[in-house]
Image (cartoon, rainbow, N blue to C red):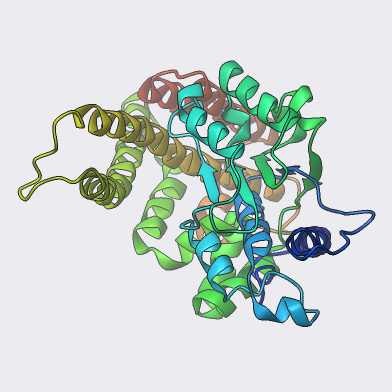
Length: 401
């Protein structure tokens, strides 16, 4: 097993990163021993990982970070970095390595205040690792100020600092930033590859794994959650029943409220799991007394954490709602396939009766209008339209379509 083994369907990208990690290892080793570094290194100071949702952009970047921090003794014997088991690999993959900093959007944008300490850290030497790695998980959410801060750091990086930016497409990143990065584009994994991963790594039975991979059309994270979380399967089943319920205005408004409420409940569940742990860890780091009383002058730090958690809950709710909209889009895409006389790659075979009914009772033109209505709802949510208003407009359009 190596750090590359869990990158589903990304063999070409893994090969490029493995070669870069070898040269990076040789470069650090030469600096430490007075040896000669590679003449034409395949390592560079900034990388941009793009690809569709579910392709594994962040996971790929983290695997690369682990390979850069690998301290396996096998490297001295000609082995490749990225063993997956040494302390460097293990902590980098878990997100606890002192020299691997990860920044993700907790709201609609990555604010400059969220980037300030990370940019400052990028100019320092590694504390105990081999490289200082900065991973920006949502580079498309950098606003103007935070993007400019990243640009300055990427233009003049420290000698052993590596920036890794992840975004859906190269157009989502400022031209001035992407021109300074080496670009790697990931592809959507095949349904068979995702199903095999679920069986091999997560111990999912083959039938459930195949169903989850097919339903999510190669989205690795969503497939894993669907295969392992009964609540996620229940939410998806409810979403797939929605199209047949939209027969009158009252039903449309009720369905919209249920979708928004389900997303809010999902976000609340995730927040409860993370917020309490983060708060206790920060209190301990600040030296809180027994009973939770904080030292004088630290209340502002806790307030900053609470503000961040509030922004993250809002984003999590919208992300959960977006999953439901993706499921709806897939449902109508299957309806359209049936209307056009094709049963190839039907993703929602478990909703066959509903698919057949809508395919029979509606036209392909109406189905396309419904898919467009879902896309318009997603665009409205991206513009921060109130979720309930956006979803109500969508359900009414689905009925009228």
